[in-house]
Image (cartoon, rainbow, N blue to C red; front, side, top):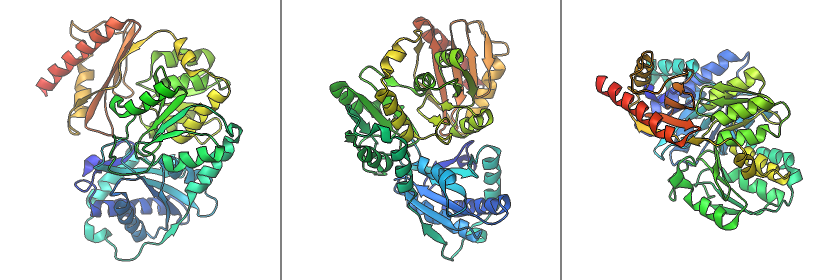
Length: 459
């Protein structure tokens, strides 16, 4: 059970890990958190994605909140950004916390909770403490037969109104546009916005379906975006692909799939004196280019970490390679792929050639995220052992200039870098490599994997 409490959200397999009494306990303890945090009990907004078990988890969670005396605002089937939106734009219900029930980009058997408390992410030590408390509570102590106090509220329409008004200057903008929602929930917000703005599009898998019958809703995986890439190649223009809960985007042009750090460069060039927060997987180009026009900071990976760093620095923008984009210049500083899609359309409307910007960057060679299966129990121990070995690296390892260990290990060489870190959402190690010389990718990768094999044998 403890494995479901991750650094920046709660996530596990239903029903093996996300069991009824655990979910009720989570709701109860989060309700107690609300009561302790605010002078008067406030409400919690709960939304959910399209997964077949999301509404069951909603009921269990609401029962837990009811035991703590907290009223539940049911915001229904929505993208995750709508859940965040409630904390910033609620005017009637005194919402102190929002919980989004979602498995995000994970396989269909996964689900979980993304939590915001008083407009800030509920993560890290707070989640780990919650996990420890849940372990102490028995089913009998939390189960309730009383009917939760649930109020339905259509925050989705408010969100659609807000974005439609924010981008009203795009009214009737004409361009070839393709979207792939992967049967996740992004379409329930994006399509009404596009229709309100009179922007025509061709849609793939826009209807929510928690079995994800066509392809998995993770646009960072090449196999999941083949159809939309083909459409954009045929039609031209731009394409957007979304993850299961609508907080992650892939932007597709006829030439390439733009990663989050590349998009950050383009957006930063269109923001005055930008302050940008990136993560350890971001390209050298992102940090180097942005530092010529503003300031770029490196943060730990994870939506909660990025959001807190943005708040600390009052940064304009945040970005993860995976396509989480956080706008704080004219928005609220949280990751919202639907808002990001509108900002991309706005760039094109203003004459920005996305491909030209990337073509003019210094040439770098990089790999995608390369994932290595491991276990939840071993992944952090492997990283610790790897860091210890690099204190006296083996002779076959390239000369190391610097080691950044804010999140895993980013090893900087003369002409590039290598990264190995433990995923906080899956039992995986994640690696990435980048260099000014193509041949170095294989050298870095071989050295890292050789050392990794030696460590695995020793553990």
